[in-house]
Image (cartoon, rainbow, N blue to C red; front, top):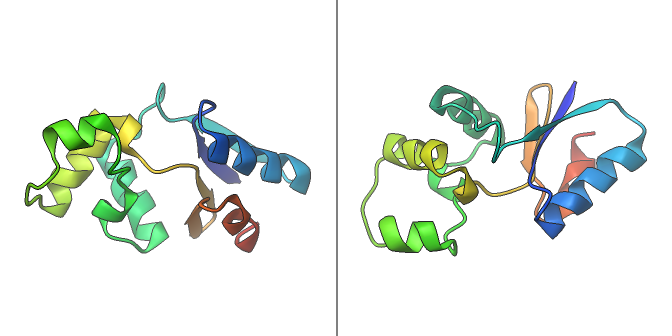
Amino acid sequence: MITIYHNNRCRKSREGLQILEDSGKEFKVVKYLEDTPSEEKLKEIIKLLGIKPLELVRKNEAIWKANFKGKELSDSEVISALAKFPKLIERPIVINGDKAVVGRPPEQITTII
């Protein structure tokens, strides 16, 4: 089952959702601001994406600038921040089996569906 971690207030996330809808494939929507992934789930997602935790952070968010910018954080500290402040999670994230992408640009999603 394809899963999209979605924020409806984000244009790129809405574009990613549209790509999935147009694909005709079944998928599940996780509104991650309401249904925040646990630290364990974030670790799984980051592993599937094949990136460092810091690469999943939206560094222009006010929360990041106020609380974390310029600090040396371990991977686990970054993951804790993402779990505590889900607004910091880059979006959309689409997972299909053992493949995952951040839909920036949204066309990236087509590479795994």
